[in-house]
Image (cartoon, rainbow, N blue to C red):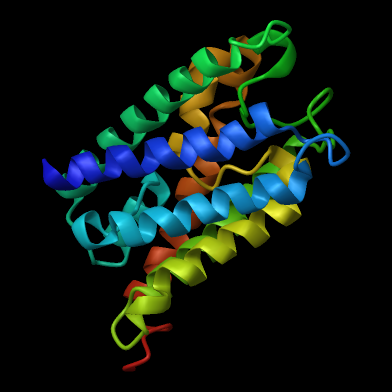
Amino acid sequence: MKKMLAEFIGTFTLVLLGCGAAVIAGADGTTGIGLAGISFAFGFALIGMAYGIGPVSGCHINPAVSIGAVAAGRMKISQALQYILAQVAGAIVAAFVLMMIATGQADYTVAANGLGQNGWGTGYLGEYSLGAAFLFELVATFLFVVVILGATGAGAPAALAGLAIGLTLVVIHLVGINVTGVSVNPARSIGPAVFAGEAALSQLWLFLVAPVLGALAAGLLFASGLLDPAE
């Protein structure tokens, strides 16, 4: 229960502050923090939680990370399922809280302004294709989980793991926000989609499938010993 609570709080923080940066602080670099600011908000939220709850649960705060840990042989499936339940719950509650805060502004509506949901295609940010969106989420999640498994593995400097992982998330966002809004985290996508409406829900499958496949590939790579420093 202690680990599930930590995962709930960590995922809540990531979604509230990361998506909140997009919804409240603004993507327009002239009047708001811009895409770079949003990227750093996600990364810094993760860094903070890595040191805040890392000693309790390992700070997965992402179903893809938990699935990658299972594939790498570092976690049991039963525990991963508990983590994922807590992560999804934290993301949904965070999205609800964000929506309640955002609606405090007179001209805000979820339909017009969104809730930081992921997507692709016509009308969404850079209007990238389905193929480009899937490929980005697959590869970005693979690289993200490789960094996580490597930074938290035996022989890695544990004190720097949170920093390395958080900065990797920043770079992924800097590259990919215009492509998909960046998920690499099914829980982060589920939370806003629940409240954002039919369009977000209809595209949610991609942000479940691609990150899971990328995480599985990274986990199996570590399980094979090809990236094990002891081999």
